[in-house]
Structure formats: structure tokens, C-alpha cells
Length: 151
Image (cartoon, rainbow, N blue to C red; front, side, top):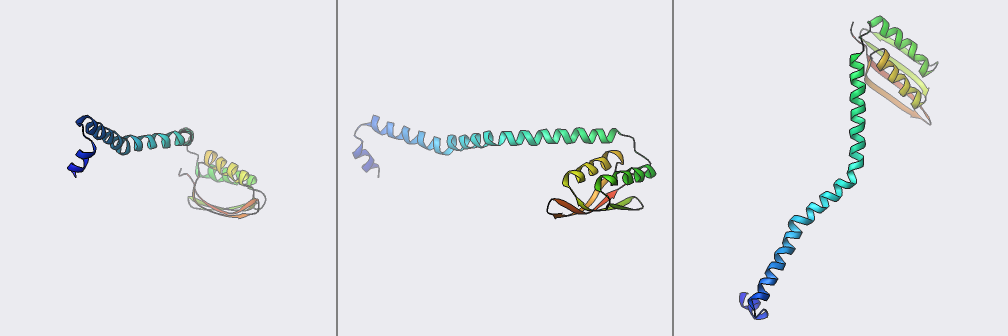
């Protein structure tokens, strides 16, 4: 094999040039090209990752705000929960058993449900333990199991 290469390239300079060129090609294929692909992937994902990071920071701020609120008495949490039911409409019902409440609702818009859940989390300090939602055209029906705060 060496004899074949040696016959094609008569001068040692030409052979050295081919070996250096082959080394650069291998370096590019094994080291530089994968790094460039990673850099391009990072550039395309950066806006999405930034948006996710911003959302996490907003959620962290909301959690800190909720933690700073005083813990309402259980009776107040139930009254707040009952008052918030008007957001879900006339067909919404709640049943409180111990430290948990089950809320059922029918034909509620997703926006109204989000507003209600936010109100219940902030004002009654209740947290959703289990959610079952069925989608009907543009409305939702279902139930939410809430954990009420302990006094």
C-alpha cells in the first residue's frame, strides 16, 4: 500500500500535503462539525428556553406571594370557596368533607375555570389535588378535589 502511495506522489512535500489535508478533513468531521451543529441547535432553542425560564420565574414569584399570605381559618376557606362558586355559574356545587372539598361544575368556559381556580388558590389557599375535566364544544364540565388549608 505504501508503495502505491509512494508511486503516485513522487515528492515527500506532496505526500506531506495530502496527509495534512486528510488530517484537517478528519478534524473538521470529528470535532468542528458536531460543535457547529450543537451551536445551531442552541440558537434555535434559545427563545423557547428563555420563555420557559420567564414562566418559571413568574410561577416562583406567585408561589412566594401565596406563601406570604396568612393562612385563613378553615371556616373562612369554606366561605371563600362558596363565594367563588358564582364564577363557575349556577350549576356549580361544592361538598366539604374534612379538609377536602369536591367542586363539580357544568358548561364553564376555560377562562372562567382558570379565574375560579386562581381565586380559590389565592383567597381560600386551597390547592387542587385531583381534576377531572370533560370538554364539550367550547365549555368544560367536571370536578375538582381541593385540599383546604389546615387551621
